[in-house]
Length: 182
Image 1 (tube, rainbow, N blue to C red):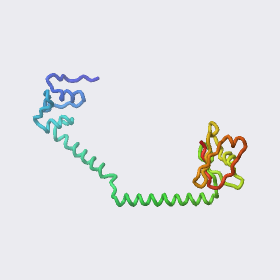
Image 2: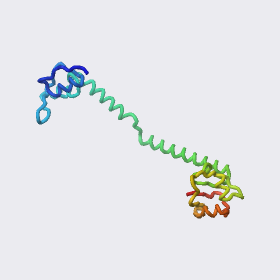
Image 3: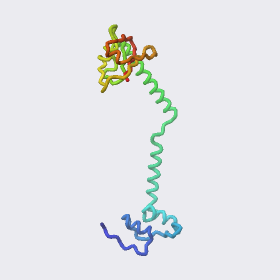
Image 4: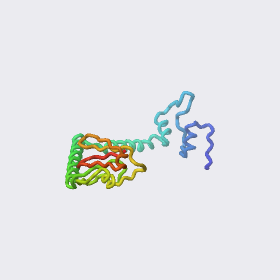
């Protein structure tokens, strides 16, 4: 640790600059009193508080700070018309992507969707597809057997007891059925 010059007789502000590593040849013209700083020369006091030797040394820093703040505030500005155009373009792109996805689904043919812990959520539909075959094709990987199975067909939910499935009762599925495993 470096040794500090003697600070006896100096103000706390002056000592702070010595401790902070900024040594000034002369003491700032503001001195502490019980009610706060008593300012005799504003420019001298402000430059001392900022760590500059004089007001002339502080001016470039203020100018640089102002330029940086101005540049930061101007970058990233966008007009309302540009923002609206970007939003419209994003909406159209999303719409086109959805249409492509729908065409791909139609090209694949009818299917059944399984929601839950399965590896293959989309199972192609056939005339012989049943609930047990769909769950086997979807590759169920849950830690324990499902407690409830819901089959959503044309917007209506049909509850199916998993115990019936284990006893051998099976249910035929239709295209676009949604199977939820809980």
